[in-house]
Amino acid sequence: MDFIDLLLIFIAGVAWGWYWHAHRMFVMLSRNPRPMIDILERVRDREQEQDTAEIIECQVEWHNGHCYVWNKDSGDFLGQGPDLESAIRGMRGLKPNTEYHIPADLANKP
Image (cartoon, rainbow, N blue to C red; front, side):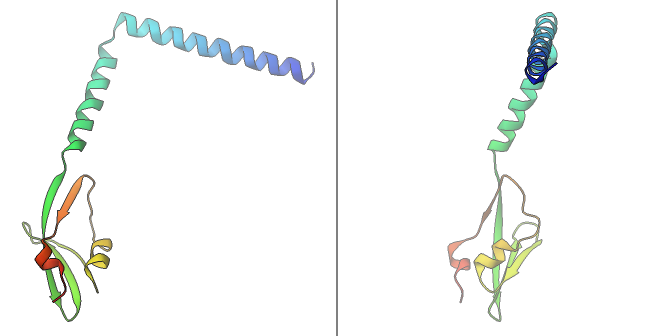
């Protein structure tokens, strides 16, 4: 057997396996579509949850030329740096789908 014969056998095997799995999936979904519907509903619910962003109010304090950022509601320390930008970059525990609101009057260095 040369290379072309092996290649043709491989391609035929892949095509047959692809057809067999597609047919099996079609039969499974046509008999009982409920598991796939449940999975798609969970995906949709998670996407809707991700669309709503949490807003955290921040408090900024300036001491000796350093910026300190705190969570205004819980009092948790978020980050520090010589300026506001580096303090934000150095924040610990940044969460996805969260907006950090810093009032403009507190963002300016005194």
